[in-house]
Length: 275
Length: 288
Image (cartoon, rainbow over the protein chains, first blue to last red):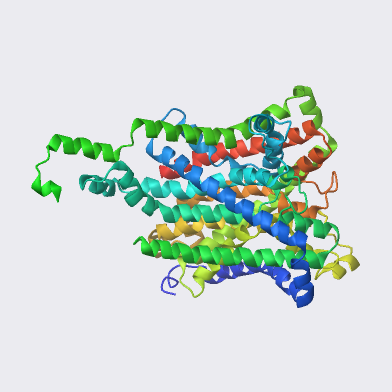
């Protein structure tokens, strides 16, 4: 406690912080763990290995992965363009990036469903030109998750691109590197950890996302039913045990993923010499 | 190696350097086109559609949808929820930031991680844990039934779930800022005889006010717009436990498209106001 000799209020502030954290977050979250102790192992395995449950996990994780990859690719281009180039209306586009953050997910859900449904503006276009139906398919879930993911990727990559020292580029080019070499050998490796963070945030958010997905997904069991919806369905059937087992599994997977991503990021930073 | 053996025209070298620093025009324009196309498709189009759909049956239909009792009840409940949760989480955010950035103690980084915890929990699970606590089969279920207190499928449940979801917003904005600021200014005030409260109001608050407002703004947007967590604990009782986002869902599932989009456009309006204020605050913070 090096600073506490002068600064007042350590006891009351840390006390309130811990109390409030405990009451609002830790005690409620711990109920999930304690409730799952009431399940015996065989019941748990029986619930989780149900075909419908496994399908929903496959749908949730695969759509979140594809959406995060697409959003990372385009999000990187958007961040690049916003930082490096100037064009008409740039401040406007810059401000719009956060729209998916600000828009309530239920609104995003009905809007995207309206656009992509077979009679909708883009839905009709896609069916007529490419013969692809997006709504009520996993592809629809991907579309909703891309929308949700955009700000995560752009907002994590943007500051790193902005602070990137152009002297490193100058050094590279004066030593004879082409523009493409400067990008692939100097710029991209420096931005990659941030892009990875953005990807991870988008993926984690996508796996748990509910509101923006359920309207466009069609929620067909085995095909386009996501894990959060299955939890809601179990609850509506008063199957608390089933909901607990699925929710706990999902929570544990999310935390393990978060841990792996942190480790991966540490490794990438270390390799690229940022640590 | 070649540079040593063969002389290079310096003018050529400058041109080469320029080329390596600047992207060719065609690359620049292609990337700008991709970026604008992507944003237009995924952001401008949805934004336009909310406004178009809300007014598609004429302004009169829009007003009649908005003047229904259920819609007004939903708006009131949404405002009430934000009015309770935002101040509580703001007080918590400031207190936690003070404790974490002004003192050294064991477990500090663990505490910071725990504060972020609600961000990594699926909204549906965030609602579900309150059902496990206060639902009929929950820990306090029987006690609540005996004492005739309703939390789940009632307003308190909605407020609790929203409190959990919006928990980290203010703290998360303040902690990095106050860490970076350090406490020299506060120490100076204290050594000149100011009391703890005086120091807080006269030194700390003016320094953090824009970041604080920024956090409050984001917290409020989420509190008013939360869907997944609230939907689990609400029970969807029309006129009683439907917040505005839930009201949108109920109308949409009843094929009342105008009603759904009328309510949705209020929330979209909220999102646009939030964006404008957010941009203004970013500008203020940048000029600090």
